[in-house]
Amino acid sequence: MNILPVYIRGAERTMNILRSLSLPYRSINMLAAFLMMSASCALGASEENDLSNPISRTERYVALENGERLHIREVRLKSSSTTPLSPVLLIHGARVPGIASFDLPVKGGSLAAGLAQAGLQVYILDLRGYGLSSRPVEMDAPPDQSMPLIRTADAVNDIAHAVRAIQTWNGSPRISLLGWATGGHWAGAYASQYPQNVERLVLYNTLYGGSAHHPSLGYGSPLEDPRNPGHFNTAKFGGWGLSTRDSLFVVWDKSIPMLDKTQWRDETVKRAYGDAALASDKTSQRRTPQSFRAPTGAMADSFELATGKKQWSATALTNVPVLVIRSERDFWSRPEDAAAIMKDAPLAEMLAIPEATHFVHLDRDNAGRKRFLEGIATFLAQPH
Image 1 (cartoon, one colour):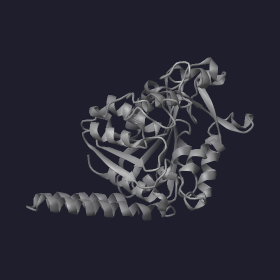
Image 2: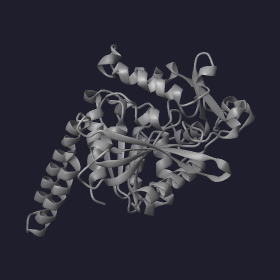
Image 3: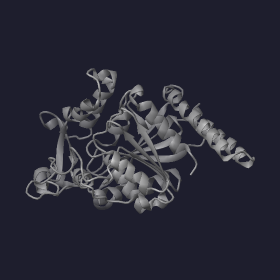
Image 4: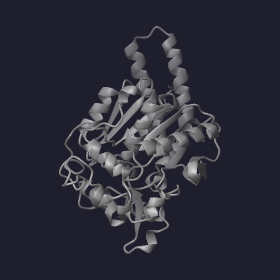
């Protein structure tokens, strides 16, 4: 039996009783923190209990205009004696699609399974151009024949279709969103336009336009057009790009503060991540070395964010609780991004993970993953 949702609901009933008493506000807050911390600790135990709570995975598709479709994987417990908590949609970043990002078939490699064990109904989205979703016809032509594909407006449209489908499948009027890196930017942009559909929002190592300086993505970076400073280098990148297995680990390895990377990151997880990324594109084996395609619209948007140009405003999230997660060793987001979201979002809280990398959800538990999972499970389980 999965104890976390049961424990949380018991904690909520206890808190309602405490609020009916004449206890000091500070005492109630301290008790609330203790109860929620205890509930989050149950996640670590439940995640290891896969045999008693096996996971069910269902591949779903959403039909779009012009014959296109979105792929969404549903991840949940096969059986549970409790009503699932509100559903959560996981949104990948710029290059690696949903399953490779959030549901690797190895221990310590599935954020989706960890959240399902905590009682959540989890959905993993592939945006158009990624994974098992439709790819724009331009991705079958050379990249220099198209402009950057899948910009923020396109991503928001895909998320809107996914949310409507989940509302139908699940019956819940509001969906929680969790976005990693560019996925967080896309999730925030959606939530700012459709806050009535969003239960809670998790922004994980996300750019926001909090500063005009970025060491690797902004002015003076390879993303900038040398002939047109301040603009994305469309002529160089085109509509889509290729990534090899080795390219996935360059900045990850640099972020790990020890020579023996296996102490920080399980080699089984690393191998599964590379395998799943390549497997996400049926054309990857046609090239040497093998490589998978991804649209470049995310990089064009990220260049603008890295130069301080916001594309959405967290001030619109007046009734949406927001959890801002930032890893101390993240190479993508900046402290200024997290601070700007915290300033703009009316209901924001911060989870800073010391020494953690951009890929903390795929690192070892003692490298920040345990703290990451507990923080998310506690946040998503709270009543709105």
